[in-house]
Amino acid sequence: MEKLTTQEEEVMIHIWELGSCYVKDIVTKFPEPFPPYTTIASVVKNLERKGYLSSKRYGNTYEYTPIIEEADYKKTFMSGVVRSYFENSYKEMVTFFAREQKISADDLKEIIKLIEKGKE
Image (cartoon, rainbow, N blue to C red; front, side, top):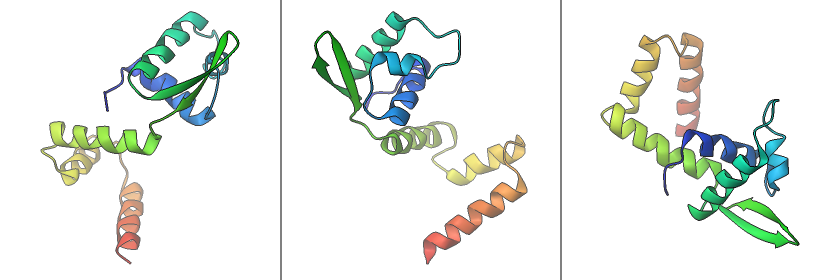
């Protein structure tokens, strides 16, 4: 699975939200002023080339459908982030966010509950 650029990720998030869609549907998911149709169409073609989307032609337009699930993308690239930046330790990652005050004590309690629930 090839890493996506920031722009590709943003478009892909809208596609995952929409499911099967057309470029015009994606454009309208952005805040105004909308990005140019041609820009989004170009990004979508790159996503298709990278294997994230399939397309079906209807006349002179294409319907795009995600091939890669959002959860699979997150698993793959979050694992890479943890490996590259946190010595392959999720504990180090959580510690980093706690020190940077990006995660609260309540968040940590909720995470602990999820972990404990998973052990059942």
